[in-house]
Image 1 (tube, helix red, strand yellow):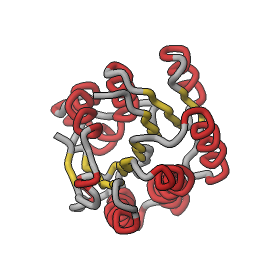
Image 2 (cartoon, helix red, strand yellow; image 1 turned 90 degrees about the vertical axis):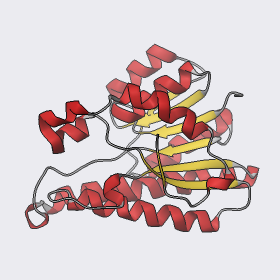
Image 3 (spheres, rainbow, N blue to C red; image 1 turned 30 degrees about the vertical axis):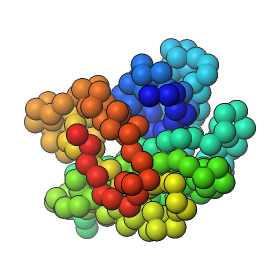
Image 4 (cartoon, rainbow, N blue to C red; image 1 turned 90 degrees about the horizontal axis):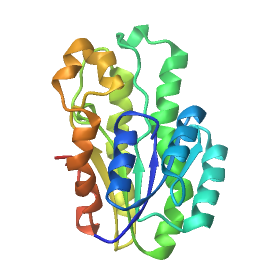
Length: 227
């Protein structure tokens, strides 16, 4: 497989970090972002050029715009764009979730995806190719108690991505992807010690990254689940 240019959000830990590691191991070029300046410095020191890691809060449209300009100026449109950055609320019944926490989950999980699409996808459309993967969840197709805000955002990602797929020109694809259940810090907040029963992000990425790289226009608009 020829080298691809990949943009990923939320790369400081969990699935995002595991995807970065696997992509680079396979010879692809990654531009990644996360809110943690410390984590971005560490990734920069670890991998260096041509990979690029920047501190970006995807809920801030202006920050995403600055980041996109830098990425596009330095290497052009991505072949694969992965909206991975997300938050989950602390376990609580919906009426017990603080308003500020609800807003933060919405701002990152929905508005953040919109901001990244708004600033990266036009260049991909102009070129006429590229795949957009918006990370969804099993809770974007089902529900569970005490995570209603998170469920709401991932159901929204399913609809947003399918509508985007209807708008893209031939030769491109937008896919909502359920990654499956993986042992991440986010899962620990929901499952506690039981989270250890599931595969690690690194194990997951070894299967999922080749799957992502193989996505094509034929997959446009399909709700998929990582292997």
